[in-house]
Image (cartoon, rainbow, N blue to C red; front, side):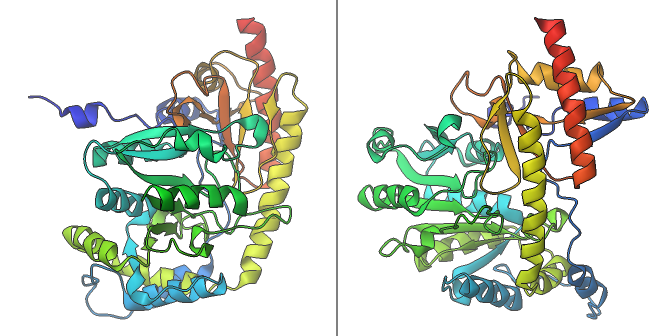
Length: 398
């Protein structure tokens, strides 16, 4: 029996493939600090679980394929607070942001097409593109510029007749970059000029620091027919396991066709939608508190990294990730060694090697991504362990 080439060619998750090594370390009694994945330890707002516990239907039946009307209306109300106006029929509920991305790509591209994506990018973009039968053509961004979008003429060189969309996350995963109005205008102008879709992954939109302003592509006039906003409750409300995402677009024809994909998988879980309705009613004060917490965590990680000889990094403006270039040849080998051969007083650290966040071969080999998703004391301890491990590893490999 043969396995399909489609699945063989898929990239193994660089975030999860080291988990067996972490599990083995734990079996040996070693404590592992997980800085490898964006799983916040922030408490999920209690109104989510309360809504599920109070669910009083006698049968947990199918939801409608485009999502519960009250959830779609809750999302409409949420966007209004962001000065973005959508109608309820311009929202589709999905099984997390990942399904929203998959459906958006399936609806806007044909097998063999290309999409432009600023790199480094969220690794699942690669996987989802493979499922859709399309290729990612990277727009390389540089750490020394804070991963800013390059000049319009540089991006325009990458556009071919096969190019159908520009996909990006803002704020960025894994970089923490927040694109300015001017940077997004470059993408908006190119999308309009070359008849491309703009697929804007905005799941981290609430997490912006240092007074920097978040801009959505929906804020630009004259391009609403080509803008697709991907969103999710996972990060915003620390509800990753609930798997509730959404697609928002004013392109009625596109949304009618994406609905066919929604119908093919029947519906999104009914109970989680009931909980998500209440999450979207969470007061703004929640985000003020959470943002302040993430900013403190960011500063801990950045300051610790900045003091380590040979480490290069930029302070991120958003999300809860930081990229760092290490004074070693292979960050994945180092990550494995930290789990198999190193501990400090019975503790070690797991982080994400960054090569898998790039499409350009050879980039990111000595870079890592750290997710600052642990409370301050644990995070500070984890970074001290990281520094000790890097120092020891360099002695062994120099």
